[in-house]
Length: 479
Image 1 (spheres, rainbow, N blue to C red):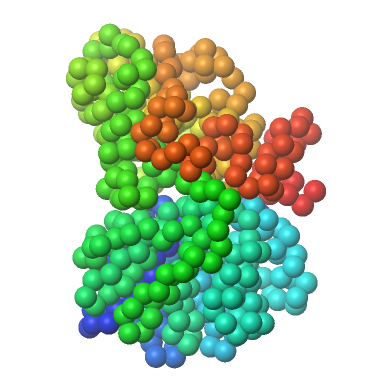
Image 2: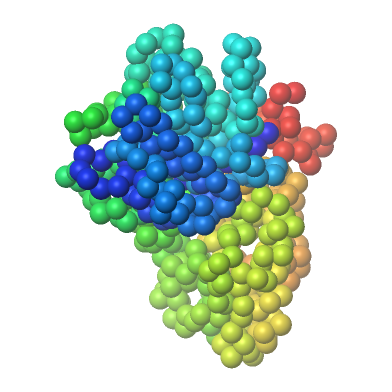
């Protein structure tokens, strides 16, 4: 079973701007959220246009392709899978041909109960073409629309059938445009409007590029309806027992210039660095960030500690993000291609290497070896995220206990394994303080093993047993 965390957006325009170009611009800003495939769908009067491609957005959509995606209403998506091979059949958006003129759907997140949902939908005689849970949600909405003939009831009923994370958007062939977010608010979703355009997106940067301000969050459990006359209607359909915003969105996944939950991602990351500097002392000569997500935190460490900050690793911007590559072999090969050390900066220095997280440890080991080969006499690693000890079932590529270095080793053991002199992790208290939310409003499951939803907790407990330790969670969900 494939699971993914991606980027989604939807736009409705009331002016003469080319909607497909706006979607394209937004997807370019969300490219960091998924690099395997991308898709754009538009509605021109009653005709749905859909184009999906493997690869990066800029490589997939030419001016001629965009010109054929006519209409003033549309959605876009970028995707990465966290298991299995990439395939065009898995790319979003998905088009379901019924009811009436059909619906086109895309989402960011993971369903924990996807196996049961797939069984139920298949039992109703529907053909499911992909292994993607986004297609399952689209079918569920279609079923509920046929049964209730009411959009609000259909979305409410669908949400009540789902467990997991989902920030989703769709339009119908009738011209309805809807976005909704799971009642825990795991994954981000925001909305914005200017004089001639309404928009929703996974991150605010997609609105910045399109000149849309006054950005707000779609609240957990809320449905957003963008009407043809330009008005937006917001209504909370399902209330969760608690909020559970993903801390990893702030630590790593989102762009540093995004706003989420009323917080600046950049400011959060600077504060993460400051909190590390309050927790640990060092006589290092220099602080080196791992580009790009650790730069803001490295600045915070430098300002609080007084240790100089420098660029010692240069990034090749044409190499994809290693963490979200679908295979470990691809991650390993890409580390050396992605970064190159500046020897004159690192030679004979005691270095603090700052990174956002350590998941499997292989990337960290490669980075430390690279810095030492460049002449550093001593390397410490400071990490802005606390130790990751449990799988994520909600959309981050952390699927089993066995692959997590911190789940199976002490800090001294990890220091030897990755080849660093001293390993300094963020504390959970320091993380919560930097994020600025109450601890009860965050999903910290990958750090604590305590999950906000019941099936996820059950799956985690199963994965801890010796029998299933090496398995990924979708392999035991149906057991």
